[in-house]
Length: 192
Picture 1: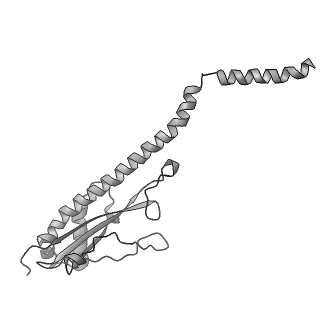
Picture 2 (picture 1 turned 135 degrees about the horizontal axis):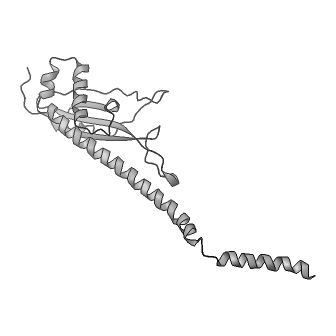
Picture 3 (picture 1 turned 120 degrees about the vertical axis):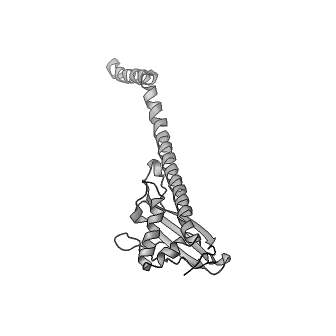
């Protein structure tokens, strides 16, 4: 009988010794707190990058749109085709952007609005083909003196899926559509 009772007593002692041992407590506590902390850091960095990119895009659009506002873009477009004028404006936007952006992925829409209340500064709904490429067509109408012009520049910012389900993507392919827009009335420039 004593042999059968010895096994449970030994297991009980081992369990008590295991519970009383505090050598690995710090490692266990870090494992419990470390994962959420690292997830929070990743989420903060990702959020910062998205908002930073948004602000950089806003600044570039405001600086580049001045060429339309003052008539410089319209004057240059008189010697160019519409596609060349649109490419020249895209180049102007790109020159105001830092290296964080791939200029080939910029989507630029320039429209003339009939009135201030009919300006379209909202986020567009993007359509995609089977390969995941954007199929929207964008306008490029810089207008005449006194016209209300809306410039929207969109960019698909790549985001990565963070730990614990944090995800900033709002488009397919783990991308976030960021957009900068400005609306203004063209100055009274000389339109030849």
